[in-house]
Each structure stands twice: as C-alpha cells, then as structure tokens.
Image 1 (spheres, rainbow, N blue to C red):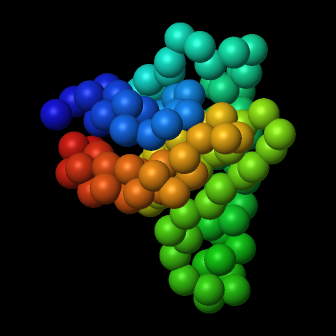
Image 2: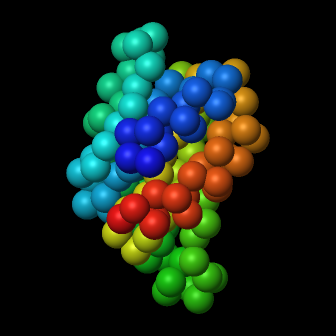
Image 3: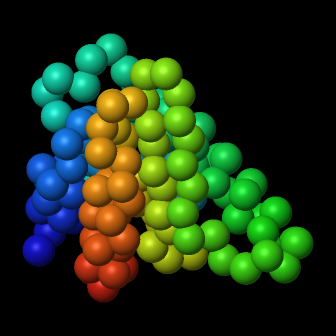
Amino acid sequence: MSFLDQLQSVVSQVDGALACSIMGFDGIAVETHQVANAGDLDLASAWVEFASILTQLKTAAEQLRAGVISEVSINTDKVTAVMRPVSPEYFLVLALRPDGNFGKGRYALRIAAPKVRAEL
C-alpha cells in the first residue's frame, strides 16, 4: 500500500479529519492527503512548525531520560493536531476539526504507524 493510500485510509476513518501527512523531523513533507473542505488553514506551514516543536520535545525527553515520545497533540480553537513518530527521522501528523473524533484519530495513527514504518 502506498503512502498516499495509508494517509487516505486514516482520513477516511476519522470523523472530522482534515489532513494527514508523513513528515520528516526536518519539516519536509514526504506525502500529504488533505480533504477539499479543510478551510483557510495553512496546514503545510503548521506542519513545519509542529516538526520543530516535536523535535524539541524529543530532545527534552531524551535529556530527561523520560523515554521515547509516542504521541503529541496540539489543540487550538480551529484545529487539533495529533503527531506520532514512526521512525527516528519521520512522524505522522493528523489534523482534525476541533469537534472531530480525537480518540479515533489517535487509534488510526497508532494502527497506520507500523505500516508506514515498514514502507520507509
């Protein structure tokens, strides 16, 4: 299954999903699937900023010997982003409307992560 197929599967499973991407920790998107009605959100720019935040959190967790980060979410009044690392270089990020199914989004990323990791 291609990266795009994996991302489309995640978005189609989750009520309120706006987009899903495979991102490098360097802020470069490998692949993205975005629904047509994502509104005026500039998700591509958000992903770059979120990659930076996730990198900082990853470093902090390592320095504090807190273990490996398994998931991070950022909730704003316009979008909820759920990020899940899939390898030392890449992570999945899912954007949801604030009223989207957050739990289902977390589950869909958890299921997709090993499949994406296998393709990397």
